[in-house]
Image (tube, rainbow, N blue to C red; front, side):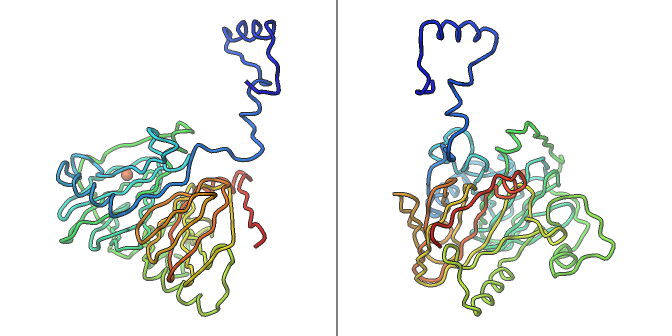
Length: 347
Ligand SMILES: [Fe+2]
């Protein structure tokens, strides 16, 4: 009940009467529905990679990737337990594929991103093409594309999965099916998509309907080289250091229609200015150590840890040495709906 509205026996009798007809009075709930600022159940949280890694290695002995279909430990926000959500709109998990294993081919309407944490020599196949996976690589499996993962290397591979599952759930638009075979047929050589779309060139008569980038593997070597070159200009954003977004080269829009993905470099001893925005963000440091202050919470992070900054909470990043952060959020959705908002404090 809204505390502004007084309750009387007559009013309460009225509410009981209309309740039987599936009606309720707006004046009792309006304050909770339309809040002056975002009010989220999502809280700041951090997961240590070393701990997740150890649990996943145990899971590796308990269940095969094939039986599990995907051997993943879901990162559940402490404020959203039981909902398979890391933020209100995003799902995240850490996946393990052991040497020689295959995570079998399937497809679904949910879009997925992978950010590789440890291991190299494994691959993700999307629509007849494989992309190899190394630490820091960003890989996309677009909505309704067949995808499978295989590890032909001698070492386990771990990556972060980020999906728009809660968004698709909210919209009641989930479709999924298995291929019935472990691996899809490969029809294109490794690197074909990157050659066609990933080098500031596009096929001359390209007509493309998908809103997802045709570059489905963004190698960290390329991303890191871009940041390294930008450093030379010595122009730093007071909140973000150097921050870039992964794009769809065909449209210039975000690489995925529902999830924005970003990479940023914080210089040595960076002390960021405070910042807040309406897109709750999942952040993965891939290099360096530091801390992020979110309100009264201080999250100390190192390489491959995963943490969450909720919507509209002030935060600052601090780096010890140089640090590189990958991040993702629902910003593309909010921007398209004219909802996204940021506040840079005095910066
Ligand atoms: Fe999948």
